[in-house]
Length: 327
Ligand code: AMP
Ligand code: TRP
Image (cartoon, rainbow, N blue to C red; front, top):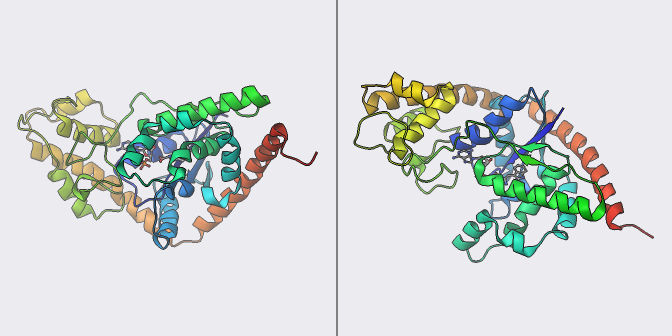
């Protein structure tokens, strides 16, 4: 069975974009693949985090995974920082990665431009991500397109290591789907919907109050044409709402155009709000049950023990190949 692996950072409540782009993709694949899903808490500290809030976010993200339908019987679920080997393997990979390739990463360029006083961790972040992936010999990495460059780097690092030290890692691949959706900001539909957006009105978070969600959708930016038609370039707002509707109902854009022919935006938005709220309502009900239950810790303990044993094996193998042992 091929293996898939993904992680999300515990930085604030995840958005509808994360849900559709990453978590739901994993849920759809969990029957066909050996699935690993984790909390990338060490990636989160590449930028400052509140130390009281961070542990709450970590727990909350796991509860959300489960509430979104990630089945603990079909997935290995764990927290990155509970496994010391990720950082150890990352160091050995860092010593086989180049400043040039890391400084060329788009995400690094963007984030370091925004804050000139960035940490070295922000630069080496993709190497830790490569370690997360190749330590478990993952075949595919289902992430949103914005993370594709990092997966490609993980490939390069794995290939390079294998060439230098002999076959050690499986070479991973970005997981492509034919319905690759990027959910955009409701207020500024030219930007992706992001946890860190300045204007909360443009972002739907999975734990938002449902009345607020409805309001945000009803107030989403559209255009003056009053025709429900998919045209991301000229009608980014309407096309984004169609994308959300399509993602949650599995309807095609043509079917959606047909369904709302001759109807105004108010009616269309109400339909979008209905499907989003109904999806979130189910997730939220399960979330609060799971968050306070005992099951969550049991699942994480199991995930930690399993991944520690797997990672240790790879780590020892790497040490030997590199020559890190008493001669
Ligand atoms: P981030 O919140 O940017 O750290 O992303 C976590 C995961 O969710 C990654 O796999 C992203 O590619 C995916 N993701 C984030 N925002 C969106 C979005 N607006 N649409 C689709 N996928 C997204
Ligand atoms: N960098 C990813 C993000 O911000 C999170 C992540 C860390 C990840 N390690 C990973 C995703 C390994 C997939 C595989 O979204």
